[in-house]
Image (cartoon, rainbow, N blue to C red; front, side, top):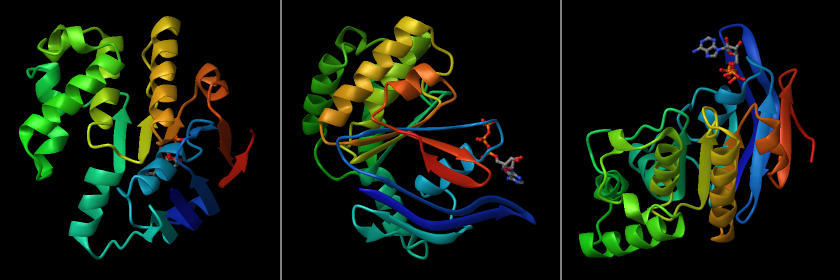
Length: 218
Ligand SMILES: Nc1ncnc2c1ncn2[C@@H]1O[C@H](COP(=O)(O)OP(=O)(O)OP(=O)(O)O)[C@@H](O)[C@H]1O
C-alpha cells in the first residue's frame, strides 16, 4: 500500500501540485498521465521517496515515511519499492544475471537463494536464455524487460515505472504490459507514468494530472 496525503509541492513561487492525494494498492496497476510539464515526474519522485521537499504525508506499507531517518528511507527504497526507468539504468558491461544480482547486494541472505529467485523470475519473464548475455548485446525491448525483472528481485510491494514503454514498438509495449500484469498478480501495486494512451488503457486505474490536481479518470 502506498498513500500520499495532501501533497503541496512548489519550485520557488511556482506551485506544481496543490493538495494532491493518491493511493495505490497491491494487485492493481495504475497509470498516471498528464501534459508535458503537468507534474508527473514531480509526483513520481515524491512517491518514490526521492523528493522530501514538499508538504504532506507519504505512507508506504502502512508506515509514514520519516525522512529524518536515512536508514529507514534506504530500507524502504531497497525492500518495499522497485523502480523502472525509461533509460533502463542497467550496467551495460555486466551480464543480465549480474545486473539482477545488484539489488540483492544490500540484503543479508545468501547468494544461492538469490540465484534461485533470479532464475525463477527470468524464466517467468521469458528471459532465461539471456541470463549470461552482456546487457550491451540486448535489444531495447529486452533491456527494458531485464530492467523490470531486476525491479522485482527483492519482492517489492510497489513498482514505480517512469515511461517504461517510451522507446518501444507495439509488440514490445504489449510484452511489457503483459509483464506488469503478471507482476501485479504476485500482489504488487504497479504505478506507471506514461504519455502513451495504449499503456494507460491497459491499466486497471487511470489518473490524470492537470491544473496542479490529480483526477481519477478510470
Ligand atoms: N528542479 C526544478 N526546478 C524548477 N522547476 C522545475 C524543476 N523540476 C521541474 N520543474 C518544473 O515543474 C513543472 C513540472 O515538471 P515535471 O517534470 O514534473 O513535468 P512532467 O509532467 O513530468 O513533464 P514531461 O512529460 O515533459 O516529462 C514544469 O513546469 C517544470 O519546468
